[in-house]
Length: 280
Image 1 (cartoon, rainbow, N blue to C red):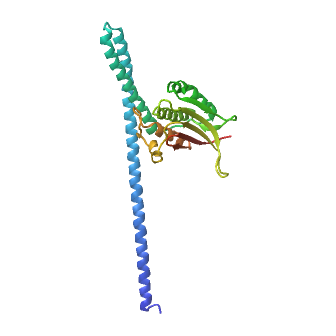
Image 2 (cartoon, one colour):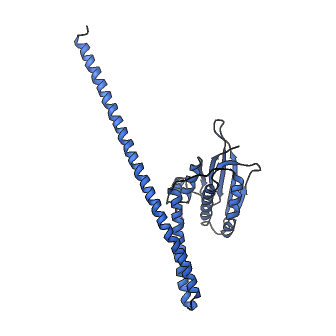
Image 3 (cartoon, helix red, strand yellow):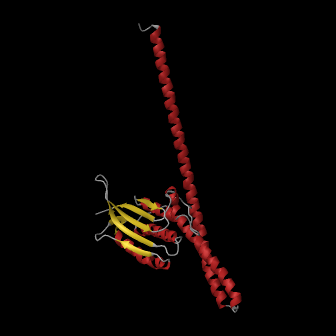
């Protein structure tokens, strides 16, 4: 019975199928290994490029500081010289332009370093109401100058989170400055209002409780197709902007294990919401 042709045919067919399956599995495993190897090499190269560009940015930033300082000294020298006003004023304007543009380059480099560099969090227990109030006091003169009404909406009870206060302030400040700049494009008599709100966010029973920090503006709003685009590095429609403010803000929030989302309606404004895990 076992020597019948059908038995041997079935055996050979079984061996062929097993061999085929083995070869396919082996090929897929090799392909996955090759993909993983390519990803590892790409990640290593990106890490090398990141380290190189960060080092280069540091090397550029130091001479820029010297240029700004020397421009200030040159301005003072022109003012103290015997030149007439007609001769000195053009020179002063050129020196001021040099200092201003150099300072802008320095700011762009600092934004880049915050985005590309390694983020080290120094987490401390913090009442987010206090953090927001400090930011409000700091930015209030600038909002007045821009004709923006700054309002704060804080709960009566503490809103606690474990955060790096300095870095989180930087993220919120970037959002606030972005909103102020967006409202600069509004018509002269349009309502310009910036609201900072802190709240406990509603969560499901299976999730950890979260807190929210809102930066709400009455600006022109963002088209839905551009919602994610605005968080990409060097994507900006603002004159003189680095295109890194929102990207840096999102990275800081995500390093905290949180999320930064925007809810916007064209013609009505935007609500940038930071959500973080709360603590008792």
